[in-house]
Length: 208
Image 1: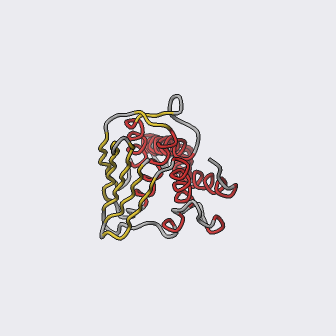
Image 2 (image 1 turned 90 degrees about the vertical axis):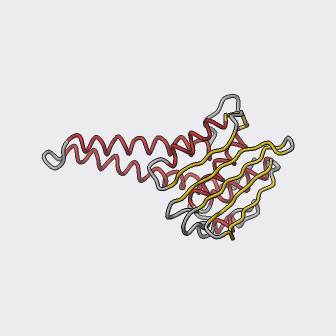
Image 3 (image 1 turned 135 degrees about the vertical axis):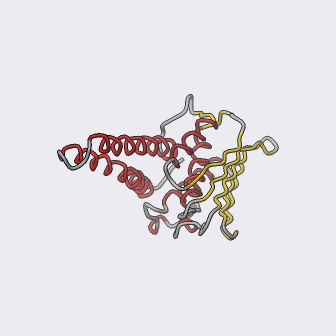
């Protein structure tokens, strides 16, 4: 699988952006500890612990979604993928409903599923429910991600980016994962569908 150099740069920028908040909070917690009398040690340590946990969860998710990390012999179980998604969403306003038998799938397929989950989660700015189904459809692996909640909608620019032929020059760090998702689907020979016209729900599916 080959990707444009700019796409790689934008993916790195996206990772940095997603980790920046947690790292900034860690720095804030350390500063609070250094300011005697401003805040109790317990409160500052709580901030540091929560931020470290959030950063670790995001890093684990993004490492598999965008990079070469995770898995064993280029495979990973769907239970492990579920844990990555659950931890990534923890502390936010989204709840996860996961429906899948625990099977081992290749990492490329796992990346596709994680990116579909990422797009779905970002489609719920006011919170909601992310439903994920992994099924065997006539011997083919099927992924279905439904994001339901108030004001559900694809982020601006993501729908246009959801193509392997998208114009790389108009991609940004906030939309590049849509293009990356389409590249993954193409490399896997997967049929992908995105339905964004349902009131209160965005549906994404892929058949490998």
